[in-house]
Amino acid sequence: MGRRSESQFHYWDLRRRGSSQSEISKVYSVSRQAVSKSIQAQENNVEYRLLEFAESSGILVEWYDRSRGILIGIIPPLDDMLCIIMIDRKNRIRVHYDPESIKGRSKREKAWDRLRSDLRSFLGSDLDLKRDTRSIVDMIISLGGIRK
Image 1 (tube, helix red, strand yellow):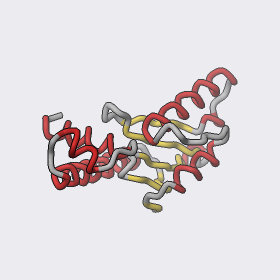
Image 2: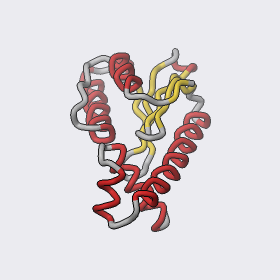
Image 3: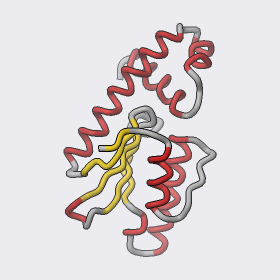
Image 4: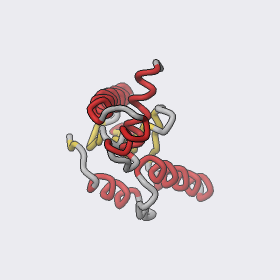
């Protein structure tokens, strides 16, 4: 990743975790317009990556939010299993499958823990994450985004 794209990602990541553009511009001594353009460019990149990954993986997109780097979809060959795709803090794609579909209590609990940890890290620490996938999906969708 080039220096410019690194700063675009960094500004976007700060913004998705709650910092204002004004705060970011003050901390990094750049104009608000430069921050805004960087975030917009990164949102375009995030949208492309999420949709491209979903398409190449055979995932039907139900909803996505480019400003938060998250996509919710279903996997038809797996009985329409829910999956959540996210861009992590290192700009990597992370995929979480519905933890309720995982066999074995210990593996299912680890999957829940990873999902909750990632959602808190990427979307904010004040999220109330209940223990069923549908309520988590509904909570994420209530944050805004694009329905397909």
